[in-house]
Length: 397
Image (cartoon, helix red, strand yellow):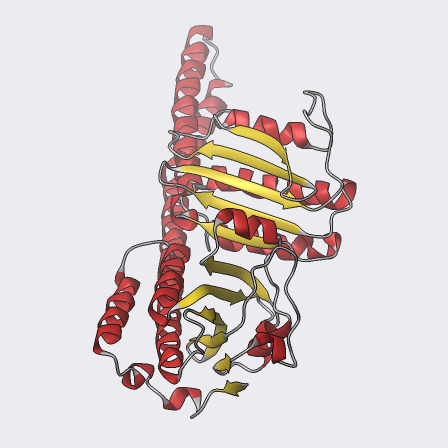
């Protein structure tokens, strides 16, 4: 037995359908989380955990749609340990009942997943799930993703009040996403304004000083006194040295500005670019303040590491599934993991190994970080590239 929605989605205010005062208070407290100054992925994960607890589900997940809005790009879970999630393998992409919510974005309650005609089945090592509740997450009317809850505890089925609670959490997630997008736009505009200012400074001071140096040197060619020529050249060298310092400062200021659009967007764009080469789109996950804390010069290395790791796995390992995980932890350390299900490589890796892996090791070493290679969870390879973010400058090459 299953049901699709009820009244039109936009005709309802989900809070008004919650009868339990205690649940309503907890719901209001959860909604207030969207005002917290935290990374979006962390906020969405907190909302998923709270939705699972309040609805009384054993498992919960939030699926984010890709740019085509036909498949899942990210998948946050609650109720599974890290070991359980690793044993399951690649995250869902949106088939079966999950795909039904993508094509028909209205609330869906199912008493027994095994009886549903659109069931796809579970991969090996996936825990059994019976009851199901799914609702769409909308941002300004457009569907951004879906909130899923499974296995109502106590053997019961999900109720209409559970559905209302789930819709309220989905509404909060949509507001949080829209807030994040607005802040991103403001931040990018600020970055562009900073770059315009720096460009003007370069023109007004640095370029004019270089022009003045050129004029002085040109005048020195007409002097007959060798001592005066030497003095002119010495002054010109000093002036050029000061000018180079100004240029380096301006470049450093540009480099330390957060990546326009965010590192998150750059990595997702790279994954899109490599999809045709790899034959499948890599799954990409983020955690921590990826957009806010990673400066440009480290972000450039991150993109190079992701590209190298994915292309190596696609070309040499015969891999068919790829996972990229980019995380910033509480100690201000950035870690990039690239996981594939290919044939793997012989370990330990010799110092003279090819496949571009020496390049990844050198990039990590340059930034005071580490690069390690492990066997994948079931097969294939897991690359782990990690560097500290608390660096004073981009080290000299």
